[in-house]
Image (cartoon, rainbow, N blue to C red):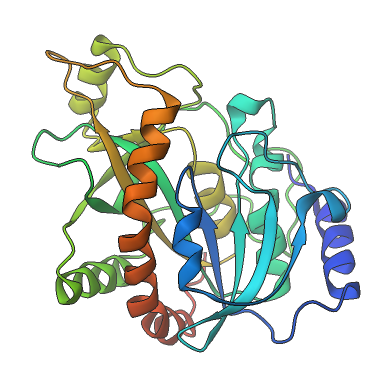
Length: 284
């Protein structure tokens, strides 16, 4: 369900708080265990989600629930420190709420990050993955219900949901920094339970290289509104169906936190290109 009235109300609260020194050009969403990457930002001001009318509240450990304004390599940015998930009981529209707000605040590009399990046996824990495409297995979409035409078309094209120019730029930046970065397909599931061995085999047959419980709703809403999208996964565990090891949220968070510094370096290196490329925004 689309919720333009609530989004506009939240935007007015943020603007009224006078915490936005410049119109942000790039939006950032930090996933589980990855908030440490925000240390790459020059923070100017912030506000708690709970102080923004209509804003959902993050309930998952390591999601701080704060909207942060600042700069990244002199590029004005706005950051969601904490996201929302379908498994928390939120609707698809509520999960995408923050991205809608960022778009209304003026961004042209969004980078959404997540912690994901590696399905591709050639991918290693601790690596980053630029998402080249995704498979939506949640059965949900934030675009259902009456379409809000000022946001975008009723049937937005998703052939370039993950901007190939931004993916190439991310891969090149990682190479310059000496970071291991893969390129692959992300499968989005509802959760919160982790995958069984049989489900893992199915995901590999479908062509997925990594799996997680976020990001998809954000990407769909962002593309609906004409934003360029780059999604980056921190690979926190290996899902190999014939030798699966037990994992837990604590292990995932610890592995993601270990990747946060690399993610921060990547974003700092990439920020000027995100801004330059994003200024020629792709129509939905």
